[in-house]
Length: 69
Image 1 (cartoon, rainbow, N blue to C red):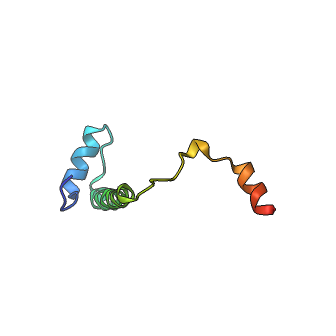
Image 2 (tube, rainbow, N blue to C red):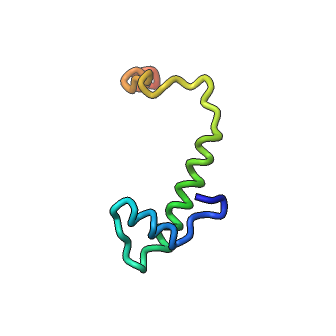
Image 3 (tube, helix red, strand yellow):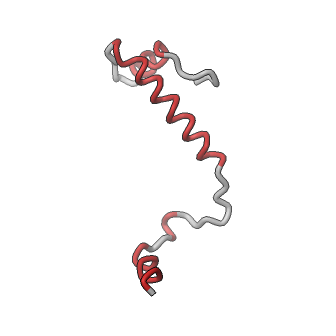
């Protein structure tokens, strides 16, 4: 996908390539949604999680207990 965004014809072509043909009236909506997802993922990639432990290290019951104390 270019920096200019996904065009409706490109969205239709990629969807068809994935085996998900789109009705003509959905091309613009799918392209806009893909552009939005792309921009959100771009922001997430820029976040610095340097000292954040992986999700597997999180224990919800421990956090709940600590908050109640």
